[in-house]
Image (tube, rainbow, N blue to C red; front, top):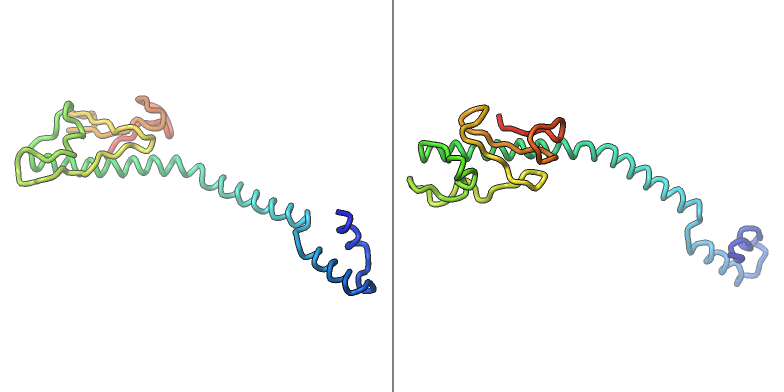
Length: 157
């Protein structure tokens, strides 16, 4: 530390060559406190901007993913109905889409694997449904019926 102050306040142009080399070498070996503080400030500022812009969109993205999964499950349900002439009953539920049908020429299920909703809970299935022949829905972020915003139940179209 003492050498740093010596190098800052001395004129090395008149010093012998061996001292000048040491002074230049010592000056080039690190960052100043001001440089470090400016760098940390810029990183903190960028982190804040990213957090403010990204975090609110995560809830919207999770709702959109749930809607997309429900749409895919709805299409698989319609294909199941075309092959079997009826929708699976509430007891078989969505699991009926994974196993191959007992009738027809299909050798595999309508989907490979049942997805979990974005909050890592299974999608719900009701037959008959409130909104049509069947309902496929997610209970939202809170996992309870009803709610508002990200906690609202998400139903297919």
